[in-house]
Image (cartoon, rainbow, N blue to C red; front, side, top):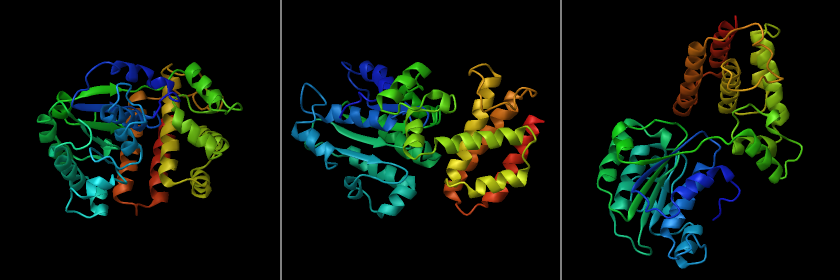
Length: 330
């Protein structure tokens, strides 16, 4: 496993190149920064039996790459490693949908003696979905971890966990690369027709790659133009709702597009970003940073509520937030 394709992870990798890994590590940063790849890299490095870890050639690495290493397990919002099932009395569905069941199984897995390697590793991907009960269930395990057992928490939210979890963990914070680094990465990936100017200023590398791969760059521009026209008063609320209803993206992606637009506007307003050619609605308006930030938080919370209650009415939700956006810009 190599991280050469993710140059913004170089500092994080070099930090632990010759250091002993702490028992609990939190890897946090925005979605689309290859945090999962970094956690897997560290896990393979710890499990590898070679001095050139990770070598990808030893038996331990082969087990890991095949997804069958008996000393490694993972848990995510949507799935878990097959080995974790044997440590849970719950069915697979309840393990992944009810995080507490998965965490208990993970705790039991960590408590067992290692078998193939000298280490025992567990990763919780999407750890920002953990509720307080799940975090408390994990806490006791983190308090008693020996040196040869490690738990990685990968989170899209910063400062999300209980203070007691942070006090027992080392933190690796991954930041979005600078535009010049990102532009080079885009070209190196073979996307020579694109640059960071085609995307929102704080777009992450893997999000940019996803938009390009799914031929959604033009769609993003169309969304930005329509939201900008709405904020200028040139597009009515029913027309914007109709546009969002007809556009071929998931409701989660629709909410993300609104969040991205507001973040971009706020960044331009505060001077963090340069003026964006698709956003002219700020010329005659001064955004209230507190109210804008509050609205972004409401949208993020609404997005997570959708996972719990997928039957929420899309049109009512959009209408509510569009009205709040109009209030911001007027």
